[in-house]
Length: 141
Image (cartoon, rainbow, N blue to C red; front, side, top):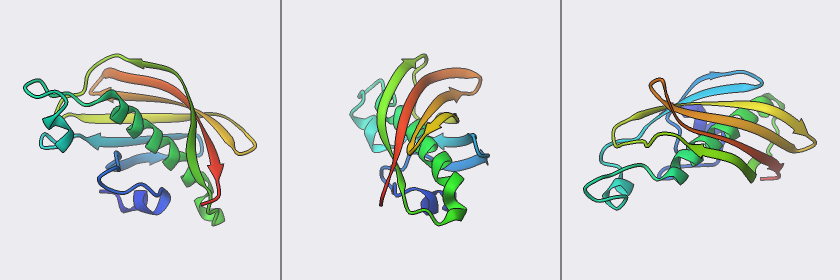
């Protein structure tokens, strides 16, 4: 796991859904998550035909967005944390199976005061698995 992630957002295992930051700029982050075959959630979703719950794939995108926002004010010693406030236009395009690696890209679309609008995509290889638009507010930790 990329130790920088732990310094940027408050999420911790077992509810940390980003393994690595691939690249980070002021407006775009690329991250990666491999969903291990022995992940506990696959035992119950669904036995005999396991697939990653869509809400966890969304969470990986939202955590990547939080990393993007936190990375943008990291050097300012800003103690605020990004909190999800709205989800819009979410579309599931492909299921994610045990053992697959997901590449995530989140782009900052706009910021107004302490609220940011972001757009995220998750891919397995070249195949789009999910796209979503979401809003985060920065709140005091």
